[in-house]
Length: 85
Image 1: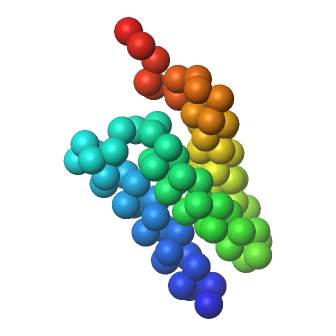
Image 2: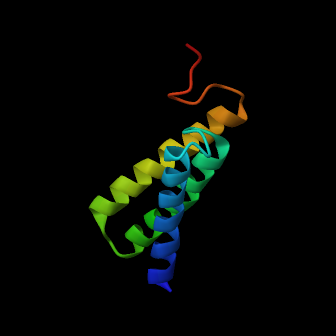
C-alpha cells in the first residue's frame, strides 16, 4: 500500500509539472497548486511513517509552499511568480 501511495504522490507532482511546462496550466494556478499540494502531502505522510527525515523536510516544505499558494489564490491575491508586471 505504501508503494502505491508514493507512486500516486509522485505522479501528481510530475503531472502538475508537465502540465505547467507544456502551458496547459499556469504555474501557480489553482490546478497546479492542488496537484502539488496533494502529491507532496501524500509523500510527506509516507516520509514521516518511514522516518525518512530528509525526504520529510523536502516534501513537507513543498506541501506547505503549495498550501500557502492555495490560501493566496483563495483570497484573490496573486500567487508568487504571477504578479502583474
